[in-house]
Length: 64
Image (tube, rainbow, N blue to C red; front, side, top):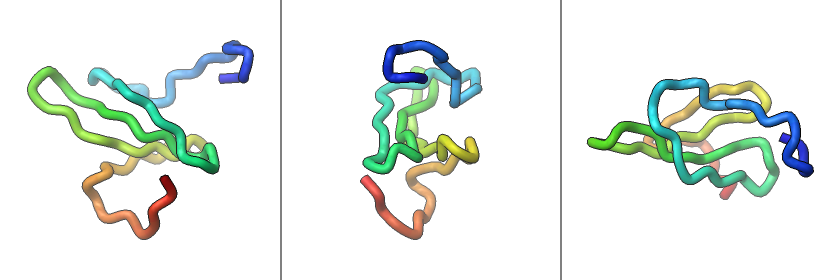
C-alpha cells in the first residue's frame, strides 16, 4: 500500500482471521496474529518474497 492509502494488497491470502499487524523496523516483514475463534498464532511474512514463518518456529535473528 502506498502512503496515501492507495494500491492496497492482501498479503496473507488465507481463509483465517488475521489481526494486529505490525511492521518490522526495516519495513520488509509484517507480524500478525492469524487463526480461528479457538486459537490464534503469531506469523511473520516477508513482504518481498511473501514467505510466511510461524513466530514460534526458530528464527535465526530478531529484527523487531
